[in-house]
Structures are given as structure tokens and as C-alpha cells.
Image 1 (cartoon, rainbow, N blue to C red):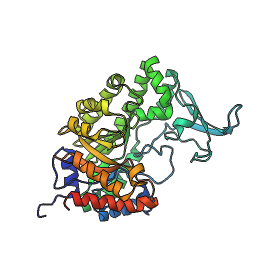
Image 2: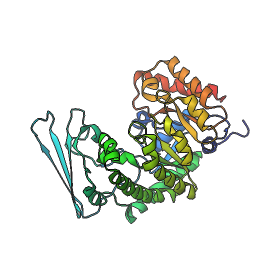
Image 3: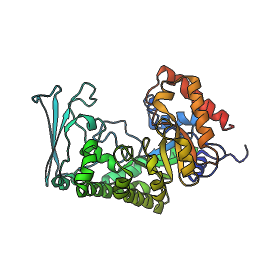
Image 4: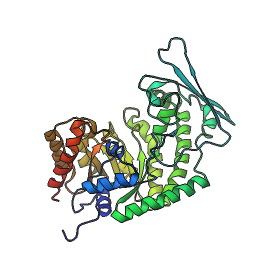
Amino acid sequence: MPNKMSSRQRMLTAIDCRQPDYTPCAFMLFMALRDQCQSYAEYIERQVEMGLDTCVDLPPPSTEINDHGDLYGLPVSYDPRVTIKEWMEDQPGERDPIMVKEYHTPAGVLRTEVRQTRDWPHGDHVPFLDDYLVPRSKKFLVTQPEDLQALSYLLVPPGEAEVTAFHAESRTVLELARQHDLLVTSSWGVGADLIGWIHGLQNLVYTTYDQPEFVREMLDIIATWNRKRMEVVLDVGIDLYIRRAWYENCDFWTPATYREFLLPIVKADAELAHQKGAKFANIVSSNCMPLLDMLVEADVDVLIGVDPAAWDIAVAKSKLDGKVSLWGGLTGHLTVEQGTDEEVRAEVRRAMEVLAPGGGFILSPVDNVREFTPRATENVPALIDEWQRLSGQ
């Protein structure tokens, strides 16, 4: 094909809701492959060899153990005056040991208590921001408005040394992106998902109605901190800023509370990304169909996480066609990791038939291919083969 697009051009064309030379395929997450690679560069190179339209993340997801494992991106720094204490307790009526962690700040002490269940992956340590906290916390870190001043000492914008290190790290990764002309994305920003880690999702549902100003102030503190981090990444010149919003769906928010609490934040984040010349993405993979009109209103460019097990993909295409591009189309865990060859191919065919016409679509398993099960070892090549066949490569 004489006028074949580069991978970056193809992805940007799809994100612009236009028709590229063919529908791109870029895995949202591909931890099964990442775990096999010795470096981030190898991870990117192997996806390029597969023919995927892979993206290059800034900063690359860290393989080192840190206190914010479920918030990819820049380091999460505390005020230098914060001190931390951790210990174990056996508490009456509890089957599992209780891990206790205290953050001593100039504004007071924040304390969390977490059950050390058999599947707890962090030893005797309690991280700050992690999905494992949500169902295992006996006491969450932030429980009342009086905790918020202390929380601000745990959400400190990146310092000069961290920004310098980020720029140094970015040079190598950007060179890799330029070498293959790949889309450059940010690792994740965050909003209400962070409340799930520090306050609890079930608590959030009640607090939204019982103490709305408390929730609003939490969200404001997080949004202000997140935008400081956004600015650092956007100033490097990325193509797409990605905001994780897995918990910003109708499992935890009604359309009315979403409009009141979250829509202004998403709008402001999208506006900042656009001012800096980047596109803006939201990751939300379940129960968000009632929110689609508001995401158009927020000027979101692409929705990542279009799972056919949770979305009505035909309705989503109809409502968003030409307005917001869609990234997904397959179920990663059920179909790619556990399905048959024909189930994978059939789901690729349906995604391409429903979502690809007219452009504005990027094919991907949702959310992740986490492990190379015996099925996945065969199904990933089948997925790629069917995609290439249907896209005319």
C-alpha cells in the first residue's frame, strides 16, 4: 500500500473519529507479555513485531515495588515531614491478622487497618494506593472531613528532582516511539478511583448523599494534585493523556451524582489536555452506558474499555459515532484467556462489524491479557490473525 499510515498516524486518525488506512489494534494492557520481557523496550519491540499498534507510555509502568502500584505514572510523594509506622495486630473477632499503618503528618495522624487475607500480595506491608485495599480494609485511611488536611500532606506535587528524573527517563522512551512512529501516551491520571483506595467504594456511595461537601472536597484535593502531575507529563509533548476512571461508573454513581460531582472535573482535565495539544481518554469498562452523553459533553476524545460483556456496543457506536472514539471490543479474561479459537475470532468479527465502520475504533482485549494460559497462548495469535484478515492487511 503506497500511502500506508504509520502506527501513530493510524491511531490518531482513529482517535479523531476518522477512517484510517485500516482499523488499528492496540492492547490496553498486556501484562502477560510484559512479564516475559527484560525491559520496557523489549516489551514495545515484541508488540511491534506482532503487528500491533502499540503505544509508548510516559513514564513506563514501573516493575519496582512501590506504594502506588495501581496508579501508574509519576512517583507519589509525601511531604518530607510525614513519618510512617506499621505493625501487626490480632484483634478479637477477626479471622485474619490486622495490618495497621499510620501516617503522622503535621495536621494529624491518618490510620488504616487492613485484613491480611491469604491472597494478600504485599507481605506485612500496606501500600497507599492499591485495589487490594478496597475489599480488605477494616478501617480506611480517610473517614471524616477532619482527615482531609492530613491527606494533603500525602498528595504532594512532583518535586524538581522527580521532574528532572522524568525528563531524563522520557528521552529514551521518546526515541523508541520516534523510531517506530508510535503513539505516545501518559500513564494514568486519577480522580474518584483514588477515593476508593482511601475511603472505600461502599462508603463513597453513602457519603455522596450523607456528606456531599466531604466528597466534593476530597475530589477537589485529588483533582488539584492530579492536574499538577498532568502538567508535568503534558509538557513533554505526549499524544494522548489517559485518565483511569474504572470506579466512575454507575455501580457507584447515578447519572445525577456523576453530573454534579465528576463531570466538571472530567471537563477541566480534558480542557487542560487539549490546551497542551494532547487528546484525552477515559478508561471505564463497565456500567457506563447511562453516562455516554455526559462524556461527549466533557469533550472526551476516546473511551478505553469497551467490553462487549458489559456494554451494548451497537448502542455505544450509534450514540458516539463521530463524537467519541471507542477502544476495546473483546473481553480479555473470558474470551482471550479462556475462550476457544472460534470464540475469539467471532468476537473480533462482531467488534469489527459493529464498531469499525466509518472509523473511530481501536481493537483491544478489555482490560488486559494478564497471563498466557494455554488458551491465551493460542488465542492471541488467532486474535491478531483475524484482525489482520478483516482489516485487509
